[in-house]
Image 1: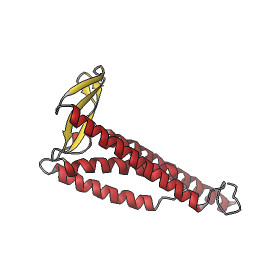
Image 2: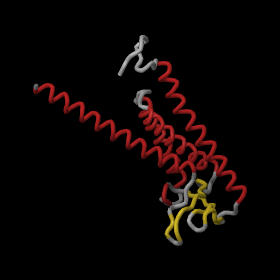
Image 3: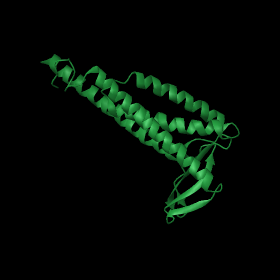
Image 4: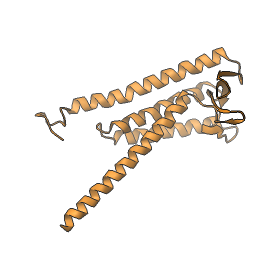
Amino acid sequence: MPSDSSGGVDGATPETGLAARLWLTLVPIVVVLTLDIVTKAWVMNTFELYEQTPVIGDFFRFTYTHNRGAAFGIDIGEYSRIFFLILSLIALGVLGVIYRGTPSSDRPRVLAISLVAAGALGNIWDRIRLELGVVDFLDFGIGTHRFPVFNIADSAVTVGAVLLLISFWLESRRDAQRAAQAAETDRA
């Protein structure tokens, strides 16, 4: 890649790399948290618990419910709320370590970490403030074949986790290609 006179790649300086990293961190977190908090408040103030309201026929509807467990209704009993709160806090710590080790130039990974962290924070907020657990309301399916009810935070975690996996997979492919090229150069 071409360098500019300041030593950056394609005109990028360390300052612009940090600014982009900050942008890709804070904007997704603020947007996801805002959407998550606002939509959950709207649902809690608009619907009765367990009320189902069709949006696109039976395929997509709002179904107001609470989930004390984790994704897909995983529940370990009376202490689910506390257990998954602690697990979420540990996950945020792990994400922090990954984030610190991620170069600013790896924008997809920075964005992925930000999405997962934002979703985790949204659900942590519910676990702390609501004894009933996380507010879920997005309900997709056909007839009795339904996807588990979820929320904006869950969506951010899922999209971010997929992006994070793709990022790690692409990195391992690049590392394997570099190792193969180095081995070929050593043989030559």
